[in-house]
Length: 321
Ligand SMILES: NC(=O)c1ccc[n+]([C@@H]2O[C@H](COP(=O)([O-])OP(=O)(O)OC[C@H]3O[C@@H](n4cnc5c(N)ncnc54)[C@H](OP(=O)(O)O)[C@@H]3O)[C@@H](O)[C@H]2O)c1
Image 1 (cartoon, helix red, strand yellow):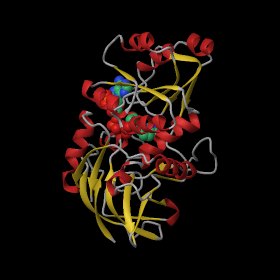
Image 2 (spheres, rainbow, N blue to C red):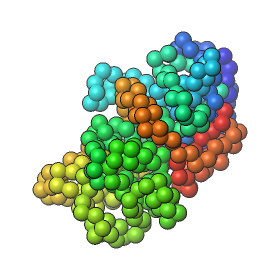
Image 3 (tube, protein in one colour):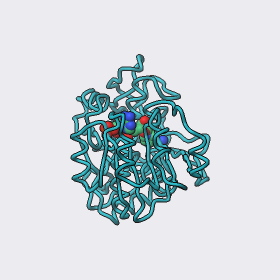
Image 4 (cartoon, rainbow, N blue to C red):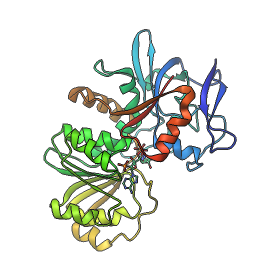
């Protein structure tokens, strides 16, 4: 089967639409894709900032498709393995190094398909797999979030961050946030989050300290120079869960703050198929609607990548196949 897909180009920086022969891809099912969603990972790949990138592979980890009038989403990875604690050595995210979802058809095994809850639209379904799964594991499996906990979610405009915020609100946590944009602050407050600060303000962590008496949990996708401040505002015994490092190395971490506060810095990556199933049940139980920023036609994919690059989204950026 020949399909058109948005692929890594010879020159990695420029994704291109290419015809790809899927006849050699192993899988029993061919699922026609209706919508796919971008993740920051797709942007990293176009910059060459991801391991195992090679040219001519279809990008994309999130997708929803229809088989015999039934709607399915794909588990956005492969080969998680048998441990609940961490992924196997063969684990890979869908979409580079193997073919992904930015295409009209995906070949996969039935075990990769999960039924979409009825209350979601097709577009909403495409929005949740990778970001929702990452948020679910970071918050609940790793962060052990409970009703009444005070949680800080950094960079609220991001895909993972917004799912984390919606999930935390659903269990009755007090949710606070950082962002780089005042208009995103207004949108986050409209969602029911309690208070936010702008991470570009040098006084942001002091402002949070003045307003809030410490956080039980911090969910962070940035790292960089922010982490030293998280240690100042985390409670004794609190947890900082790191799922991303878009701001680079964590500098100036104080061991004294880590050991004296008995704080934990915990890594988290996506999640297992079991957690994916639990996350879908959680979405349905709380009737959570993923937040969609924009939907682009397939051929306008460069506009979608550009939007993610400039960081002007609030929620998920989708492609309509
Ligand atoms: N480990 C995993 O399994 C996993 C899974 C998913 C994502 N990730 C990683 O997590 C990161 C976010 O991914 P995503 O798909 O959610 O990206 P995204 O939708 O493009 O969002 C990126 C967000 O980063 C935030 N940000 C930028 N500078 C920041 C800063 N100095 N401090 C705090 N936040 C800042 C922005 O928040 P504002 O717009 O509010 O300013 C922006 O919305 C990426 O690095 C990605 O590779 C890892």
